[in-house]
Image (cartoon, rainbow, N blue to C red; front, side, top):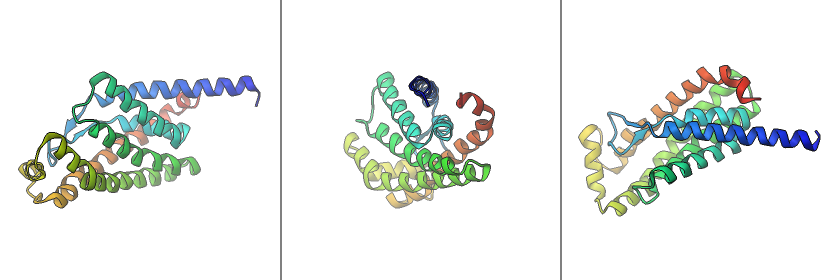
Length: 201
């Protein structure tokens, strides 16, 4: 491949990353809670777009879009959680889109896509649960000077299965991430092939 063609390919890739980052950043602004989790857990569908980027350009590009999306969100909205929320969004987002994109990279079939999305959803659920249990909830408690028991109480108020930190993670955080993974995966499956010509320009 000539240097000119390499440069064109690089510019096309950067352009696609920029466009997908912009779309993901807009989608991140539209977030909503789920009925079984405390209100500070809010679902957005930006990972559906990032999955498309990962399927088209690979896991590294997916991670880059995930990072840029969170940086743009910080620039637009600042942080209300001492960067805890943004850190969580980036790590859990990568836990989802990177494994899914990596598997699809080496098996570009519908079966490969489904396996990748299932693995990505499981990774999101496990990483999100561990991150919340050991780091995020304690950090959130420290930052807001809010006892962990009060956070557990918020979970119990909307979900009677919540009784302690472990059950908060198992019955609120994990289902939240499973729902997010399933919705974003379905959107990706429905739209990726239809948009693949544009994504592979």
